Image (cartoon, rainbow, N blue to C red; front, side):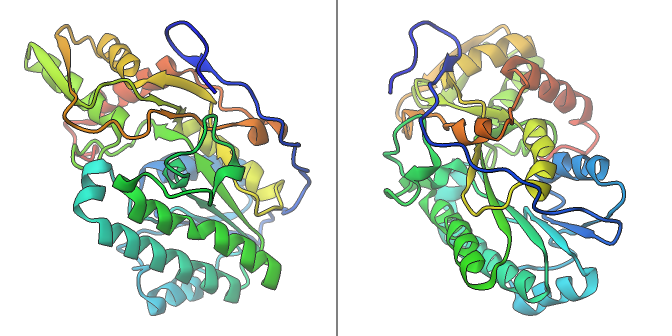
Length: 343
């Protein structure tokens, strides 16, 4: 399917997949202990406050790698033994941008495979009632047709540049379905689009496109540099979703969604990388020119996530792109000199 004519953002038609049944699946009580792994990460910084606001009656627990190394079975078992969670939001993962994935493919594959398997099995043994896990849209096949519906998982190999990470994260789908079938273990897999927002990783080796561009524009503006160059042609079209919108939906999936069918969390809106750069240049106040280094690959040319299943549940990601980007820029400029930003 081709994007609609005209410049700017592009809306994509819904697919015809039937809506899923949504029903009260899990009641959060004062006896519940909600554990968030990977609590030092970008998405966790948005999800933890959302959980605290949604479930003030429950005990909210947050852990990081310095607390428990989830690559070791004894450490995973110790986490469940000491924290005693009844609900688990599993965010711990090794993540990074395209440069990091190219440099450390084995690490991305190994660490995500091992931690995911160990956490699922230990959660099941510990009697956890509900698990919500996350995987990236990069796990879809490189040749997936946009808008990419959840039925396209397993229909091809992921984009080669990030395949070790992407294929490892696919195990979330298999674990969720197989543990539900054999053990009745209730887990949900959510698939956000290209996340951006406050608390992101702005390290240029590890950063994704929005934080990398944002940082380059701000620093070029402050240094009065005449131009900024980005990799690729700028022609690829991507689907960006504000992290705060994703976080706001997690309480719903903890309490009202009882299925291992994955759900895309997306705006179903496409914008080219070149147009994104123009918006960021405008919002950061940079006045120089933008160059494109076409010697570097573009990757998949169009990648938009179908949000029909999400919309069928009555859910939306409402923050407009410009508004979300402006919030992110303001946060970055406020905190970048105080040691609170990952640079």
